[in-house]
Length: 326
Ligand code: PSU
Ligand code: MN
Image (tube, rainbow, N blue to C red; front, side, top):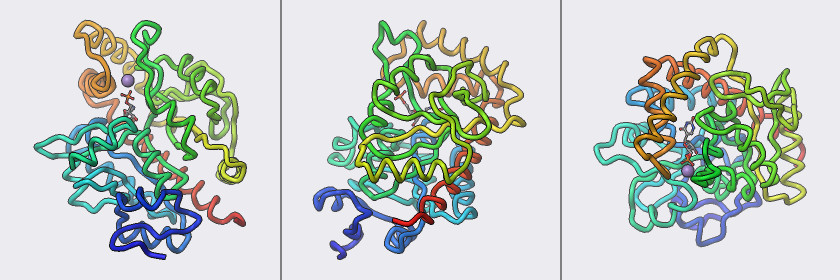
């Protein structure tokens, strides 16, 4: 039953309440895909506004959407615009996020209601995107890397809300692990605390470190095929476990060749951020930007390649999940 213009169809696939659905604006393509029970992959927008420079950010967002489409799924890039949670963006909106004179606000769960009520342009993080995807009934979300426990968190308490979101929202996040701007060992500990399965994907049992397939840390689980991941997601949904999953896909080896140089740049960037006293939500964007500068763009190339790879894997998982008997 439709609930007025632009609102989502009320079906078993839609988890939002009547009130929440009035805030959601589905693009025509996403609306049709969800109504027809076709596979949909959510994509975040902070990676566009804060994760990459213009114009590579917009180009990558478009290329990633095309990869999802070419693999038989519908892409739903998510952002907050004009007081609505927009699920599926047109080209003009992608450019607005990537190039706006008034920059988009990085929007995690904490910020959603403020950004909507003030009608601010909001780019959703992993946490914000998971909230929106779940409201729209989307179970699979592809990105580059998740936020995590920051280095030095024992004194700063800087732990990304992405990790608590993963503990409370049943969306699978297909990523390349987390960047070593973070403390990866503490990040895995915290995900265990939150009850989140972390799965190394493919022929590996190691948790990948974004720019490198190697972190030296073992992932608690390892799965090899889209079907196995789809079975995990389906079982999680059927059980009513409200937690998400981290599906950690190693960067393809041909794109990992500069990882040692990038690692040194990360150490420098972390030191600079401490010296400058950068804190809170500014910390991750500062580090990402500095690493791109210090590596002369090598990290950006690797970042783009792994996001595309993750989008492809996510589409395969979405197709597989869709093919399973309900
Ligand atoms: N890590 C990346 N690229 C990104 C981000 C993290 O390699 O673009 C973004 C994501 O949107 C992620 C957010 O959800 O940063 C985490 O920010 P914080 O550490 O402030 O929670
Ligand atoms: Mn933080």
